[in-house]
Image (tube, rainbow, N blue to C red; front, side, top):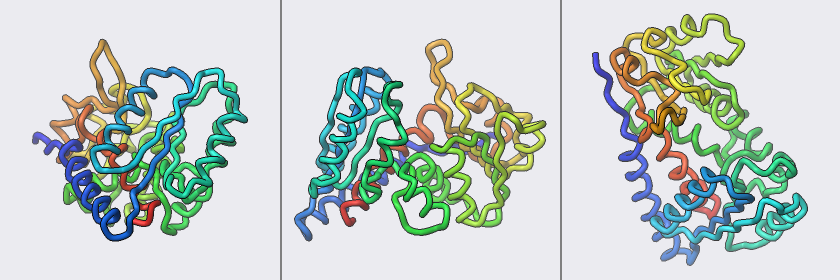
Length: 280
C-alpha cells in the first residue's frame, strides 16, 4: 500500500477562495471589512516570518490588517494597553498576540486580556471552555484545520478510533476534544505513555503533535490508518515531521506531508475566524 497524500496546500487554497468571496459579499451587503490586528513582540525569526505570511494572507482575501511590531524591551503593561485599545476599536474584529512572548511578559495574563469575541487564535479560557462543552466559539486554528482537512478529504470521523500523540494546549488537547465532538473514540498519548506503539497501532485516525522528528515510525501505524502529522522540525536543513514519512506512507491509507499538510491550514483557519468574528 502507498498512502494517498492529503494536500493541505490545495485544500487551504480552496478555503481561501471561499473566504475571499465571503469577505467581498460582506463588504457589498453590509459595508463591513473584517479587520485583524497582530501584536509581535521581539525579534524571533520564526514569529516574524509567520506574521509576514499572515499579512500576505489577509491581503489575498481582502481582510484589513494591522501589525504592531514592538521591541523586545516592551513591558507587559504596554502590551496589555495595546490589547485594551484594540478591544475597544470596532473596526478590529480579531486580535492575535504572536507567541512566544519574551520571558518578562506573562503570556497567560495577556491572552486573557483579549476580548473573547476577538480571540481569533481560540486561546482565551472562555473560548476553550465553550469548545469543551460544545458551544459555538472561535476555535483554535491548527486543531480546527486538522478537522477540516479530514472532512474535506472525505475521511469519516464518526465511530473511528482516534489516537492523539501530544497533549499541548495548542494542538493535542483541543484536537482531541474536536474529534470527540465528532463522535470519534479518542485516546491521548504523551511522554509518560507506556508502549506508545501498542497504542498508536490501534488508531484508525492518528494525529501526531509532539515536536520531535520521526517519533512515530511505520511499524507503529495500523495498516490503512489515516495519519495527520502536525510536527515541523528542521533536521540538517530540511523540514521533517513528527512521523517518519518514508515508512509511514507504506502503511497508511492517507497521510499529510511535511511541509504542505497541516501547516497551510493554520493561517487559513485564522482568516476564517476573523471573518466569523466580524459577523460572517
